[in-house]
Image (cartoon, rainbow, N blue to C red):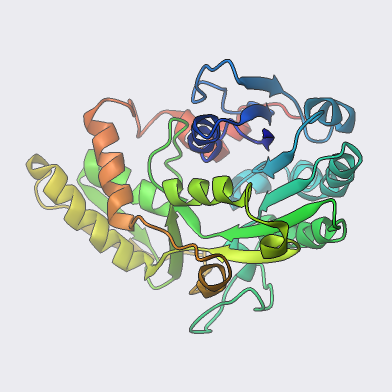
Length: 331
């Protein structure tokens, strides 16, 4: 297949693209390159295009001849979104339907959209399923959820659409993010010997980056009748932030015994997102279940630190989306 990965130079894309190439697909990455493209491999079946998803003509040219589009693109996380709410609305919502329509018009037959499980906001439900009301607590969550119906609107026998609502992703990527819960906690534990927990009681589902990218690869070849017009949660382990911190503490102390006992400090938080995501639907309908744990993610990041793959991790802006976006001019 010829697969276009929109936003393919980011955290998930830099793990996904090598897998697509290994499967024998021709791959196009269409990305604004806010974080550069250093995390992507060099390959004769990979074409990398710097482009803005608001530019429909450029996007249309990029997807020419593609069989499938995997859309990972957005201004991700609340702090980055809030730097320029108008611009973020343009990128995360207003350009979405024109982009989908252009995809249909280009003859692409499959569209995989990476939404987010944070669309559920705050919920006391013991299991948050795909039918749960969307109660977003920020504009970032709201616009991700508002985009979903615009994709389903174009579902047809010749255009297979599927929406994935991933849990918070964790683990190592060549384009590393150290502003995601498990990744933040691991960085601080390894390099400060101290973890700060904001709040602690919030429930946060997580999924290993290798698992979520395996899922995107898998969805490319599923029979249309299994996935057409469907929305799936994709998570694995649901823990409170405090429980995550305790796991990170234990694993890092095992991986880096010289660090000694890692302190956990708790402070108040205004981030109230809390929900326990159910991934039963995707397990039952597709037989798909994650294979890697949060502990695996922490050990992978520890290995990256040992191998010198994450230099200056406490200070370098490239690991923190909001700092990188702030330094860019996107107008």
